[in-house]
Length: 324
Ligand code: FRU
Image (cartoon, rainbow, N blue to C red):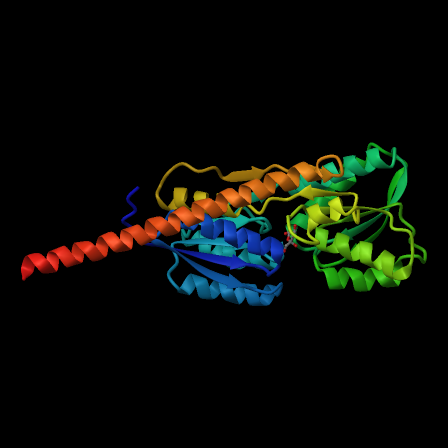
């Protein structure tokens, strides 16, 4: 397919971790089909003020479209709204801003993630139990929505209580530090709902460190790899994780649709699923297959690029010969 126009997509990422690396890999994989499109990438290390400054910088760089995963919703709304009002297309991924000033949203359904975790917890505990909720940053939209979905699901089970909430800030170290101070004292939950797998792992380690029996732990993300969500379920360190796709590939597809003036959907909600001991092996095998297929595609892309380079060289050579 011919793609004559050069586009620059600015991508403002809120932080850096395995899940966000997968998002970037997915984006780059999809961008390989658009050699004329460039990605200007900025990563804010979980620092909201830095992310605002990085977005302002990106806006000055003459980008054609902005993709952003905002660290916290409210503080990033103004700068994104400013871009959107100047008619720059904006795609919000994973985390949201606090107003409808964006062209499209791509990401997992965080309310559904929380709701499914709540339903799963209720079935696991047969409708009765005390829960510790380990949240992400309270001003980031997935933490707000995961909590809401979870609490709504529990409404049907009057004997299930969220006994305590701890703000783990999405980070393993923060979560672990706070858990160590709390568990085994007044807080003795039968289940911990951690808003991501890193904090779920922190929970497991904190209980082990204190020599306390490990409660049921539910995490979110379900990444492949050692000590990532699927592995933790397979090793029985945690009971379950809610698969939370990054949406990287879909974000680039949507961006290209917008830039090339095709139809696109304003809300692309990617669905979630529970991973527990009953399906984890299957999920792992499926991911391995997908990854090896992707590697094969990348190898083919590399070979095609080589062939193209050889062809161009030979064409130049023939042209020189014809001139001489
Ligand atoms: C990665 C992460 C994920 C979580 C998502 C929510 O930075 O913390 O673990 O699911 O962000 O935005």
